[in-house]
Length: 524
Figure (cartoon, helix red, strand yellow):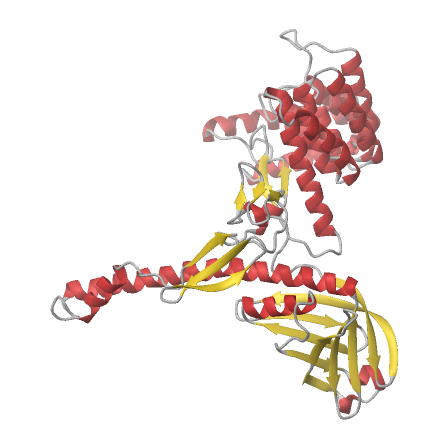
């Protein structure tokens, strides 16, 4: 070891002692922002050790297993920055043989290194399974942290090896390891594993104990992978409806409206939510906590942005100024708690919009596209940039009303007649399916939003009643028995419901009270 490296290691020893004294004095763990001066010295020493390269690896081994102080945190950081094969091997050793927080922290660092860690981890896991290393208590060393590190590296080698491990764990009856491995496939983001996981769900769903946990973890991973596919694809799909659906029986996994099994995380446009939809149910991502923050890591919710869903694309036939062509149109939707808008536009200056304010508007639009109506009576408009189309910006059509009709062949046509020219957009069945999916999505969001509005209404109502009581108690409303007190008494009286048909579904009918607005559902 050179004199320079000796000086660095000596300075590192002094710093570790000072950090330990700081922890004793503050009765707290030393975090990256705990003490400005100590952190600056630590970063300086880390950079100097990284500059030494592989020469620093052997001197750092003693620090690596010193988990009673901050030494192992610094050692893992430096080895991760060096990232050489020799440094990676030391980190793999730390994952396999370390204790306390060291295996977790080293596993995260190996995952951050990435592809270079894959083969060393595969070889060490294989060796541990073939020739188990015993821990201090005589049991086999845990390979869980090594599997975790490998699963976080998205690489074909990682995925293929994990698939082989499924068979090995199942054949050996290692159900706890098998269940944990199933839970780690989500990090690979590879839907090819879904059929294999479904087979495990079918095999172990009715079992007890750790073997049943295999089915539980496999099912959760399938859900996450399907959500990834939906969010990442061009399909406009929201998952989570049945999680808050009024008609969903969680115990049986059964949708009462359709009398069939329905996964709780699938979008269900015909049902009604019982609360506001929280898009965070879409996706769970496990992230490790900061060093010292716990052994198991924190769970954070990373869902889609339900108010800003990605655009959907469809090919539409367009008849414009005596010319007919097909073009790719972008379809977006937006609802801002005042009104909604579905916009269909292309890059050549044509924009076609559906407006909606209520569920009835969306129901009419959906019925029209599904063929239950021959025309759509709601509001729709064309915005046409003639400058893009004909080089004549003075002819721009801004907000020209249009109409939509359905012919006998099931083709929907949106028409705008102008003084200078006419425009027609034709929607075939494929484009109609896309639009219906978007309409269903907006319908569901509008239903969910009604719960937010109801909460606001009841909060305002409570505030008003509280204010009236305060005024009454202060005498500002006059003698007891006045109009305010009568109003409050009347408010507390139960409603003599007079229910009227509101809407019908395939399996149930909904009625609404004409007096208080309460709804009830009766299954057919």
